[in-house]
Image (cartoon, rainbow, N blue to C red; front, top):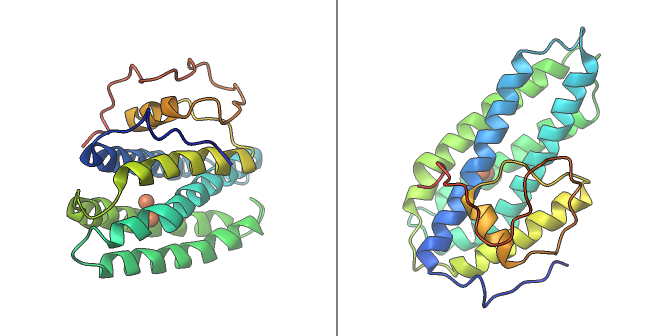
Amino acid sequence: MATRNASSSRSSGSGSKNKITAMLKADHKKVKKAFKDFEKLDPQEDPESCQALVSQTLAEIEVHAELEEQLFYPAARGAIKEEDLIDEAEVEHMTAKVLIEQLKGMGPDDEKFAATFKVLGEYLNHHIQEEEGEMFPQLTQSGAEWDTVLEEMMAQREQLMEEKGMPAEGEESEARGAARGASSGSGKRAGSESRPQASGKSSRSSSEKE
Ligand SMILES: [Fe+2]
Ligand SMILES: [Fe+2]
């Protein structure tokens, strides 16, 4: 279990709420790009690249979905007027997981491999639109302990990525950089990216910020 350091990362709840939504939006952007990249590949001609892109994207989606389900949605329930939006999002996650499981059992030589991944992308685009367009804007600052939720999401992200053998991302939002700096040293880096270790605040000024 990654350690938490509550005192050093303590910030205002509204800042933490915005950092969380910025982090989730950064994930969304990355996943949407992966689905676009996939369209440029041909499963027959380049099965290895297709498989690599799909496997990595599924792992990223799974980490994101677990963070939302375990930590973000439960917190958001207390901070949103239309709780139905959370119910709908949870159902959409379950439906997406059916496609994800199907894809895990397939390879690029499967007839429906590309079609299944494409449908997953279309489905997630719709889901992302609802999260960013309806759910996130409705979240109130006072309805949840956002500071704690952010810390827990950061710690769990590290842990899940490590479990899945995923390298730390080269591209990270200000939210991730700042929060990771507060609990540094908990996760090992695979070192495939040349970014400097986050040692506090990220020097990037993220455009993901709301
Ligand atoms: Fe999401
Ligand atoms: Fe979601």
